[in-house]
Image 1: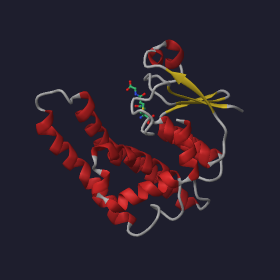
Image 2 (image 1 turned 90 degrees about the horizontal axis):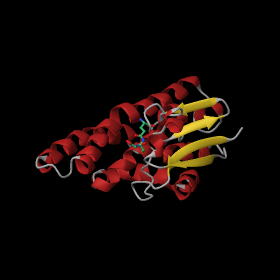
Image 3 (image 1 turned 90 degrees about the vertical axis):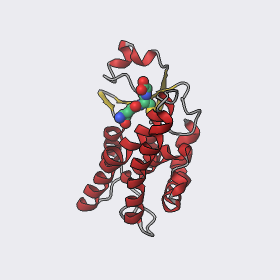
Image 4 (image 1 turned 120 degrees about the vertical axis):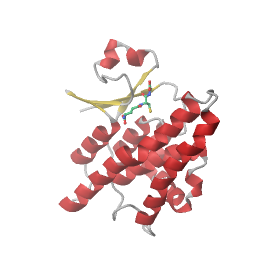
Length: 206
Ligand SMILES: N[C@@H](CCC(=O)N[C@@H](CS)C(=O)NCC(=O)O)C(=O)O
């Protein structure tokens, strides 16, 4: 069954792989599933045709026959459940991989998104320069803790999993601010993710 995802025709980051369709493309590449892409514009995503797929008018969406999904966490979870390669076979290891997916999306990503908002949405406000250092300090706690957990390992819990795919995708959003490079161990972890052939194919397609 053909898999169709949506993405922006013109990505706001100019192709740095930060738009969230990259996560989905990466997951599909890791498990070797071909897919098609339907490009949507910023206007079209708020029209009824797209809102039928995504109630909040965002990208990406995922269609596979009758199944329509939104939210990258749910989409990558589904891909990992359906195809070998992103979840370990051991039940406990699989549960831990899912835990890392949630940690990436619920614990690590929110303060990073706050920085994106502070820089790009509120960047012209008089109080932004005063606020930015506070926002950055709130972000730093998580990378420090992640570095401690990662230690000298390549991946968060044994072999590469959907947990790493999501964590690397989230951490990539730190790079434009220079914050990622403050944590060489984490920067190396992200670089290992980016070096994976599946990621390179996903980025090239995006
Ligand atoms: N939590 C959602 C977030 C989706 C999201 O914010 N997508 C962005 C593109 S990366 C978007 O559509 N932005 C357009 C907008 O905010 O209007 C997910 O992980 O899928």
